[in-house]
Length: 241
Image (cartoon, rainbow, N blue to C red; front, side):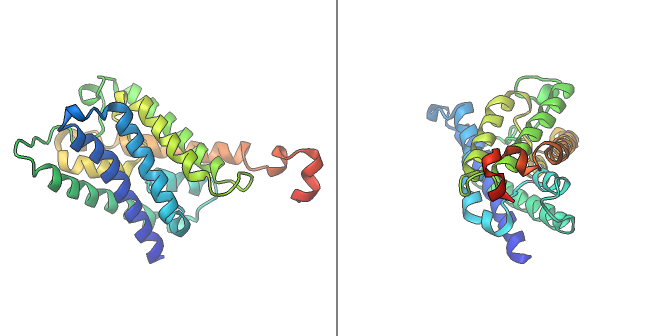
């Protein structure tokens, strides 16, 4: 179990440091021109690379909502859930701390939003609480649904991290203007602890919405995705049994 928790810690660390780091550090150099597209790909690449690196050890969740969704779908033992969530949150907090140390080394450093998630006046595009709630639930639902589908036995093995990484990239492209994109309570917690104030006050949404979206995805998957034979041509059914 120690190996699995260590893998989740490292994977979540890399996700937060690479994803949020691309936003925090690149923002200090506008001439670099990383922008929305660059930050979105940074998040996707963190999941893709770490899924290949340690996915075989822990399953590569790196996200409390993913762990909850997989548990609801019956793909992950509930007895391991709390340990995974603790490891993920700790990985995110340490990553945010390291990012803060690096970012604050710049002479004219200002904390600003520090890539935290928010709604209302703290939404990048000024979107309301309702808009943020709907976006986070929906994006996490589809993220989990894609994870469940991409890792299913009917799909050729070895390609799941690519689909999952690209899915997270697309999610960020769509939702950064609304919430700065969470779909991951651990990622939101690490940044909020350093911003404090409004980020901590709004953090509840970025735990509630992703977990609800992931849980719904787990339930829906059990309804529409579990019957292997429903996806197998009649000519191959005998070989599949």
